[in-house]
Length: 242
Image (cartoon, rainbow, N blue to C red):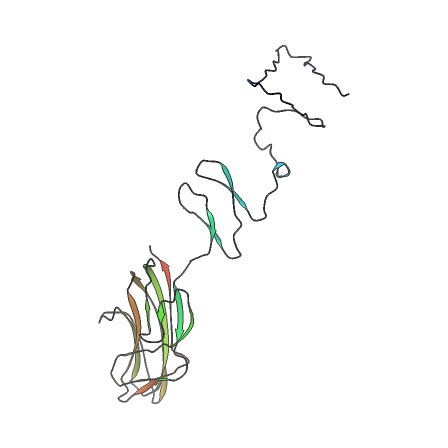
């Protein structure tokens, strides 16, 4: 049978007292089968990674509302760690940066523009539309979704066909169908029967329910077409609050 030996320190003069707890139950204290020192406190930087309990790959240690340690469940590829507010551990969530966003184009079939008439561009094909907020079948407009108010960056462009010297293609974005435009860009032909390009970008503050539409204008004297391949309109939320 192994023995337990208590050895006092040769240089010390204090008395070490072992005090039992207030219990009516038998307790067994098992000492480790190794050489070491029992501590009443853990010194700073004393706990190494090797001494920590095993966990799940990708988990992050945080604290719950009671201040107790808790493991944040591993998220999915592409998710980001976000705050869920005071008194709640953070969580891995899908990123919503720069959404809503959309990119649309004219697709097949050129659109005819009557002379000296502002015409809404019929953008019927979508590269993407994260919030299903662009109507590409009826009204050809982007509508700011509920809870997505803020600043939006819009880019657009087109190519007008067969314009003569001094005639031009002009484009603008209207919000809520009003006469006041938020962006205006134009290009003019220097010779006859030229292709005229227009490219522009603008920032527009939007609230839920606001909508924007792309319009084009040409003053050739007769109807002219927009080239279907090069007519594009895109937008995304870049700032502001919801």
